[in-house]
Image 1 (tube, rainbow, N blue to C red):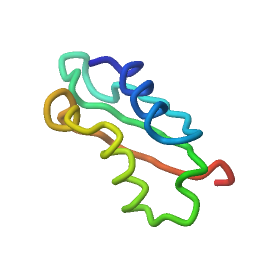
Image 2: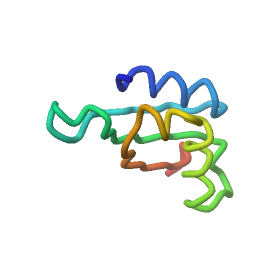
Image 3: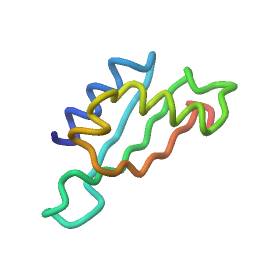
Image 4: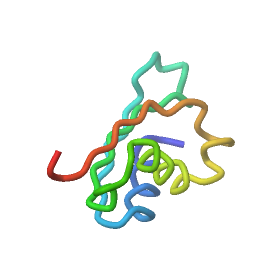
Length: 78
């Protein structure tokens, strides 16, 4: 799975979101990702709930294709 695929999944599952996904580690660790997700859907949600929304959007990919996800979430106003 590549960063662009992860971005597409997140953006299709979380309304109005913009996702930026990178590979923060060495090239041989291609199952470790970093994601920044901005969405109005996060408004009024706790940080934990925001992260759960992203994990839910990724579904089974979190156990099959993604070993680690360094996650930053925020609303457009942040």
